[in-house]
Image (tube, rainbow, N blue to C red; front, side, top):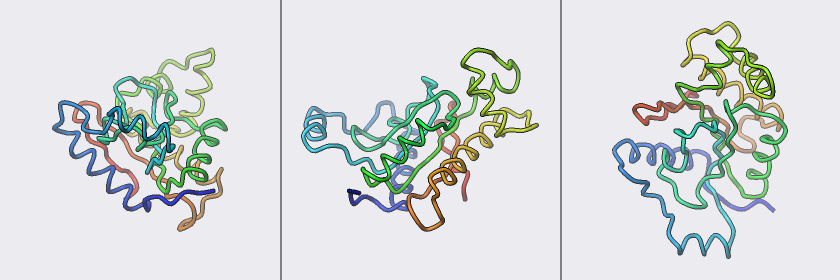
Length: 188
């Protein structure tokens, strides 16, 4: 059963306001108190947005959006690439937790994008870089490549979960600028 939750536009506004607070914050103002831990343990989670982002240790969605425990459903994988596991997680959060907004959050200085642009690694990392290469084509600029990669992941979510405009969750892409802390939403 799908829970009632914030609308996609209200969730997006909340993310933008949280990022604005983060730009000058020294600590995360999100609620991480014992009371919220107890409440979410007893009553479950009600995240208002799904954020798919890179595993990079400098990209911390709860901090970037000034969110606390239970506010964001975060899916992390190097290069924020999509496969059936990530899609299943998005589907779960949308269908069972009532999230109406999905944000694919790429970032600048991404090691996975950099590897796709230059190294062409082997092993299991190749699965990640192969997906990124599908997104970026001939693009050589790392920031533009990160943007293209985030946009492709958002498109994969829409197509794979058969999300039509105005139906289901809103899916958008963004890029996080590590140095400034700013999130730039790419879908205007």
